[in-house]
Image (cartoon, rainbow, N blue to C red; front, side, top):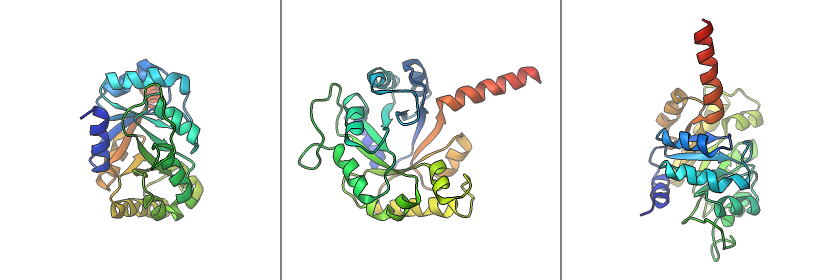
Length: 239
């Protein structure tokens, strides 16, 4: 079994998987993240600095360090999804999905006919990719159960910040609005037998989310690690 197939198996079995988020488009920084021992590294094509041109080098660096490369694509568009998969990502996290119909289209873009409509011919295409749909709006929350029921949707990834914006509440898992929304997502995914991923900005929050039932947990981002580490060392020197 390939590493990618093993990862997919662990994902769908809802085993704990810990990852890193890469916004800096450098194979060196991506490999350092992967070499820290995480299971996956997400390449942020939506808000990070990487473009399609960077993907072959970034995904190769991540694989060499023993982790699985995932692309958070720019948008829920077949072209964005297809290019990420064709250029080395083993799966995608798809943002801006507000309905089950949009989720169905995104999942179809990951799969070849007859079950999907992905075009063949990718330069460094891997095995069977996975499709994880982001839930980051009130509209997506309203369509949650229908989205989870779509064939080809392998899991859900929560964007707590954007979800809090949409719900008009604080970015706090104990917030009286956000907290129940997160619980609803976890419960619906558990009922559907599919994993829930979530973005955490530190290890303590990640540990909490794991205890609450999330299984795909991003524990660190390169940009925050650099800025926080530099600030902490500077404060130590000045203090």
